Each structure stands twice: as structure tokens, then as C-alpha cells.
Image (cartoon, rainbow over all chains, first blue to last red; front, side, top):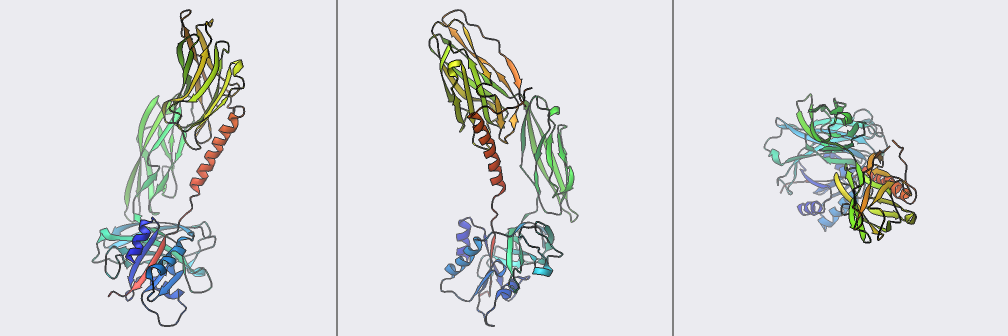
Length: 451
Length: 47
């Protein structure tokens, strides 16, 4: 049995192998074996079952491992029928288990109609009998009332006093079972390893970047996790963060709200502290660091100097806030001074795909678009996303040839990883031609744009 | 401020595809198939 347990553990599958003394059965577990058994009155040890008696066997097997592997593999192929989460903690000499079940079975669950029951199997990693995992207690509770499809059921289970055990080797699994048919046999709906009672928040940190001209608050939903009996309160240490709701049962999932109008330019940091307590004496806390950046999102076409008649290379830099997935714009230039445009992805474009519309290049218009894979975004900071090269005409009349952002043939747009249109400012660039009249830097044209 | 516009084709298709695919990716994340935890119990007599 230990070899099988190691085999499934090494394969990363979720299988628990638990042993009980057949003469000292705990809870209702051995009853489940007998509820599934329909043979003669004589059975042989060991009695074995998977998933509350969905399959059973007894007696010696020609090949134990092969027989039991077949039982387990058949169960692994079945989807669970409820969502189950469980937490545990030591209370004196007892273990208390908090379980929350969401009924996804598509039928109403109740003790009265189908024997629905919630169990906790508490085991110790210790070789007492044959294997290294012996069940010390198996408290259970009949599911009272009716749990409709998509309904929830919560219960607190507790062991008797556990004497002579090593608490650091104790674990618990919560499982729910019911009678699916008209017979006496049970089936397990789902099991869940109980985690040590704690308060956790997902994501563990919040980082937002808000365009300087964007005045809308940013709302980031959090997922609070912990024993269902907890009630939480939330507080922030800076005025630009609020939490809504800021108190309630742990099932009321809060959101962090960053007030855009209260941000200062650049980075700022704050901390949200969640504290949670229960009537049965738990007191837990969790902090969520929040970082916010406020600044302009700028797409800047670079400026370069070159000798008239040679090639010119311009960088396109996006001062990114970290949420940009796709960028589109056009460049407009004097086609008598700049010819043969060639565009390549810059070193910071990552795995973006570049699309170029050169259909109007002869008229001095070039459409450009680059898109990262779905859901991805550029990192916050200056990103060299494109490199544009031109041939310059020898003896060009003007010492400075503007390369401007425009909307033809491709309109200016920046799209976020969530698909939303993002506000941005676009700055023009130029090619400065030397070797003729003295070059002079053109005045940049500042054009804030966006939704 | 000017209203947001999607660019002309083919960039429009590219951007829309990116946004739509992003939504699909989120759905796939939310729809991660739950897995059964199998509980194997044996009732024995210590030897």
C-alpha cells in the first residue's frame, strides 16, 4: 500500500491512502464499506474501498497493486460533484475542521433524501498497523436541510480528545458523500485536504498603473480565503486606497480601490491590512501591499541625425504603464526626402507580432501595428518597440524632415491586456540631415489623445 | 479628446483578435476543470 501511495504521489495525482483498524472503526467509514457490500456474510481482510464505497474489494488478491491501481484509476477518471474546501486547527486536545461545500452535483443534497454526509478523516503519519497512515478520528455530520444545486453548506467538525498523537504528523481530509441510487451504497462527491486555518488574499500584491489624465478610480477584486466562520475588517495606511466592502463575512469578497485623483506622479506604495476573527477564538491577519504608478503613457518617435543620401534609423519608444497589449499608429513623412521605409520590432517588443501597411508609403504614410499574445502586456517603463529605417535623398532641401504620428492608414490606438482602449500621448520625431545647411531640432508636437 | 477608433484593416483585425483572444484566455483560466481527490481506505487488523 505504501508503494502505491508513493507511486501516485510521485505522479502528482490526488490520491490518499488511509488505514483503519478493522476492530476499532472510526466514524461512519467502515459502515460505508458494508453499505456497498452485497455478497455473503463472510468477508476476508483487508476490506478496501475507494470514494466511500463507490468500489470495494475484500480479501487477498493475486496482485494487490494491480487490483488497487484499477480501483484508483477508475475514480481518478471521474469528475468531482461538489466544490469543497476545508481548514483545520488544534483546539486543546482536539482537532477542529471547518468545511464549506458548494453543490455542483445538479441535484439537491440532504441527509433525509439521499443520506448526504460530511466527514473529516484525521490521520497520523505513523506506522501503527500495516501502512504509514493511520486514521485517528473520523467525525461526521449529516447534511441538515436541503442543499439545492449551486447552494452552499458549511459545517464545523471536531474530533474527540486525541491522546498520544504527534500533532505535527496529524492531517485531515474533509469529504462529502451521498447515496446516488435507491440502494444502500454511497458515493463520494469530493474530498479536500484541510489546510491549516489561515487568512490569505489573492493576489498577494496589487500593482496598478494609471495614466496621468485618467481620473477614474481603479478597482481590483481580491479573493479572501480562510475558514468560513471568519469575519474580516480591512484598513489602508494611505488615503488613496479604500477597500469595499471594508468589513463582513469572509464570503463577501472585497475589492481594493485606488483613487486616481489622489495619486502623486510616479510610484507610491501603501498596505491594506485585513484582520479576521471568529466567535470560536480565531484571530488572523493578512497584509496586501499595493503599489500605484501615475504617469503619462507616451508613444515617442525618435529623432536621428544622418548624412543626406545615407540611411536613417529611428526608434519608437513607448513609455509604458505595464498594461499595454497592442499598439497601432501611422507615421507621416515627406516621401521626397525619406524613401524605402523598413520597420522591425525593437528589442523590447518581446513576442509581439508586427503588421505593416505600406500601401501608402509612396505618399509618405505608413501604417504600423504590433500586438502581444493575448493577455500579455509590456513591462512598465520605456520600451523600444519598433525601429524604422529610411533611405534619405541626397541633397535634400530641408535639414530636418519630420516623422509624425498620424491616423492614416492606421488610426492611433493602444489596447490594454484586458481589451480596453488606453489613453496615450503621441510625440513626433524627425530625421536631421547633416552635410548641408546646419541642422536644427524641430519643435516637438505634443498631442494628448485617448478615449 | 478624440474618441477611440480601431484602425483600418488589417490592423483592426489584429487588435480585435488580440482583445477577443484575451477574453477567451480569461474564460479558460476560470474554467479550469476541477479534479477529484480519491480517498482509498483499507480496514485491516494489525499483525
